[in-house]
Length: 134
Image (cartoon, rainbow, N blue to C red; front, side):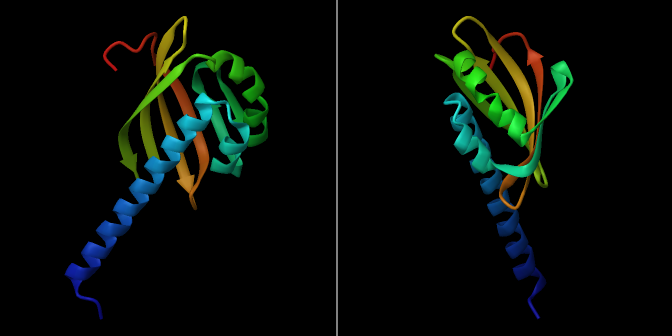
């Protein structure tokens, strides 16, 4: 039987590895989003993933979100995206994001829920009309 101390260390290592994996998914998400890279985003999303845009009350399926990349490519041209992880709660990670477009910027709070290394849910909400103090 494994001593309790060894089990605690093993659980801590697993939790740390899970957090690193989630952060990697988030980093890859924003890199692909900045390029409007539909295939890369598709690889990060589970087949039954949902993307919820709270500000406009829209929930998209994976297919609908990927189909919007042509339009997004025009919007994101010349933009920068910066993000900071705010909290990690189990399989969900909360991120504050600055979308710095050429003519305006905005701050959002986004959550990513992952399962088996894929995003199963993403929710986005605007929390600032600019990126001041980001």
